[in-house]
Length: 383
Image 1 (spheres, rainbow, N blue to C red):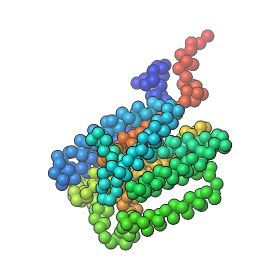
Image 2 (cartoon, one colour; image 1 turned 180 degrees about the vertical axis):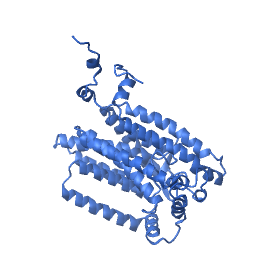
Image 3 (cartoon, rainbow, N blue to C red; image 1 turned 180 degrees about the horizontal axis):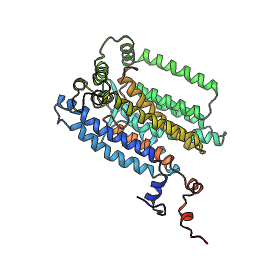
Image 4 (tube, rainbow, N blue to C red; image 1 turned 30 degrees about the vertical axis):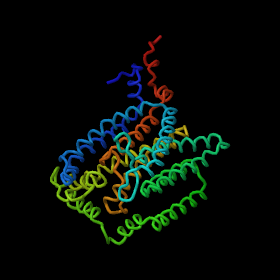
């Protein structure tokens, strides 16, 4: 336990960090490791790997993810902006490169191999995009002569173009939705809201018309016809688990779900630990989003308000999309459940995002003084 009189960086971090956020993130990381042992052995055996291949790799991914999240949480607001700008520049270059040298999977190019390590640039692009847009919105509000909103729109157009080129319709909708929430927080007029809503509807229609795989997923969702094996098995796993589950390692439906360790780990949680576990996981995500938005609304600094709001929004929307797909409430998207689904790029990128949230929501020194926590005041002897 750190003393309040200790002025070291670690002690200052401990007394200024939002420990509720930290506990929630650690809980999700822990659940990710537990559920990887439940969901991944069948997948590993099916493709001829060691039973705990993916579970071991999940632990390997989680350790550096935890380190990255904690390291980022030590940064100041200005350092977060600089880090985001560097990430944005690098990931935009990689997003262009992936179109030419990326690994093609099921007709899409979303992965690039660097020094033998596979990365999905779009995962790292999201937190950088959110923070830079937050800075642009804040600068425009601070000084209306600065065309921050216009630059944010141009950046959105660039990012959307690169995502559509891959193509990655799920990430496109996620980025659009998050940007819309941030623009709303920045005080856009109702005319803009209507225009953006119409553009979103038009974009969905265009994607349905232009991309056969998007049309196929929507058609299968609406009609129930075609190859719906994976989503059907995900639903059956939840039904088989009931309220309290069949017990750890006792699931049967999970053994035939191709992506049970990744996109459908939520269904595995439902089968083995029951709907009670599903509601528990949902509650943690809801807590993070609601606490993040509540904290953002109380912030006096515009940049911090927009950045925290945007980061928890993209985190929440991604979790909602994943859980909705598992519950057959949305067409299949191929999107991971933050901190829980298997995936190295996703784990590290989300850790960076939530490290930024921890950094931006830390109590500032002036707030500590107002609350009577200033070490110099507490140590001053009575005269």
